[in-house]
Length: 201
Image (cartoon, rainbow, N blue to C red; front, side, top):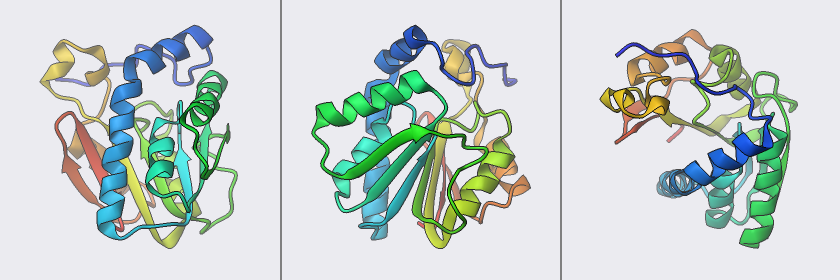
């Protein structure tokens, strides 16, 4: 099936939309955070500076914080309503890890070169206006030996029944975008309803 245009804004500025997005997706995105944490554990990761580029309501970052309490985690997003939900979720979860959520643009990341030991980017490649620019920024702020975990929903036949699967990329399309960017070489892989592109794992 052909990729369809987004049916929602690129930035969730509307409080009601953000809260609805949270209610519909919180459980599944928490599960994604746990899945990525398991991948990191198996790779030997234990601590360091972490960037969640496009953190949304913080579910992935919180699961990483639970799994790796010695990390220093920063989540950036342009949606102020989602960032408020992220900060509230940290308080509700009783997280003791050094975790900060702040407004930031994944296409112009406000951190120096070679800064992070781990960069995570989830469910954003199909939403961001210029994914190649975002990937170049992820590569720039990641240390040479950093781990980079990128994941997103994949487009397949379920898109005929659920709109969110019709606006995403296939794994082949996503890999093609990676190759257009400066992002280091990684390993692409299809999951059940998602695809992954992992570097340094």
